[in-house]
Length: 360
Image 1: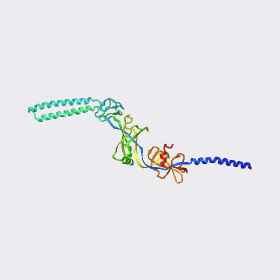
Image 2: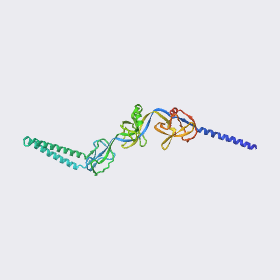
Image 3: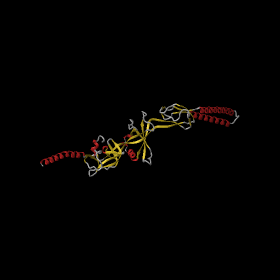
């Protein structure tokens, strides 16, 4: 009987000793940091999908019909203004010029004869005037023939880079047929669309918009080393999207940017009374962002939020939260809906001040 009582007492001691650390550990693990959104006047950088265009991009087309006799350039080649690019077989146009020159010479001889006879009153002054008109007409036709002949030499109108050459040597070319495109890539335009509220913020906050300087994020997520400048804003909003187009100009001394490329313009936008939360308080599911809101019973519930802007370690919240709600700051990967938690509240100003890195 004594052995039984002793055994029971030892079992109770061991049980209490082993259970106490586990309980304390559970309570310790249940302590979380909670904070709230905060309202501030700030600015943030927003990315806009953009289309990159050359400052000048034109189609080079044939102005005369004929066989493509010579191609003097290659695809991707840089050419100078006035450089010869193509030659359309000129034989027919040379013959037309010779014919026009001969007709002009004959008309001048007729004019000389009519002038001599008019001075001797053999013919009237009208005959001399008719002869003069024939000379003028012949010279006009000669000038037109020279113009047609000059069109067989196709030259670059400005410095630029040659695009694809769809026609090969010896091809029969029709008037107006595309021979290539020419792009001036010394500087580039980036076109991007901005919503009406952001446009109004941009236009009414001149001091806070960073002197209109913008960055460009390339398709491989590397930033262009040169900054651009917002030059123009279109005059009308698109009725379907509610957006308006901006145009920024970027220097391109390395010729890295090409006509038709895509990227993301990084524009700094001022925003007043913005709701700010730490990025580490959020998690993402299928491209949607969520936070855990702590209710009055200390239970956490997930909430979908809309983010309108991003700053280092911070998000600008457009909707989904109210100012006085409490959100879970740390441990978002450790809790689930309807968990009751013990927490320590930290003021949002202190959280933002000490914030360094986003939570993993």
